[in-house]
Length: 323
Image (tube, rainbow, N blue to C red; front, side, top):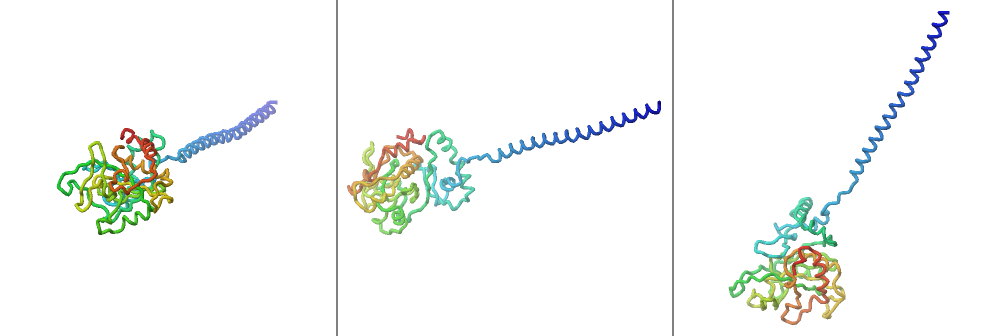
């Protein structure tokens, strides 16, 4: 009887032990798998979060294309700048050489120099416009230095004006003319800047130099008639204190003497406003070739819409009080 009871106890103990082992084997791996799933889910969430950060596009303030086309510098001679010369020249441009800089340097320099303007422009709708800019310098025979004294030795200190023109021919034809050597004074001609039908800005003469954009000419200001003699063999002109900008003539106005044509493109007006916004020349000193011409033979820029240009110009904070 005692032996039989011991046998029963052994069987029960063995059964309990096996049941416990089975439960451990069953529950243990399940718990481990559950932990692994939790860790995997956490890792997955972390990966998703990391991926969300990695794929967020951080838009740069100035794109590479903008940086390369609007690099601003005043150091050498074949790119255009926005800095005020020591002589008080209010013009915002001067010619320097873009090839002297790497693209990375140009981008870094542009971002640094344009930060104040960009910060200001962000508050104004429509100021994301950036024209294409190309330097095509005129032949040195077609421009000269600005004089501090006229041919009679009298000091001259006229404030700058902007004179607007049109090419009459194509932009390429005008640029070819400017880049041609003209040894005779009477053949010499140039503008500081030319704006193509597509809005491209061509820098032709450095602004600190005197372009030969107007012959016999005078500017009427509240001070009276303004003109300077720089060559005793020719009439006085506004060239010594003028910044000449020409608009490429539309096809229906090229190579003819019609009084009007179809007018300039929207991008030309936008580029003109953009260019003028980089100067501090007031509205009342922005004029046309037709207005300053004394010969009575000039009509340019024909079909020009001054109000349209000034509306665009007023978008720029620097020009809202310029008039």
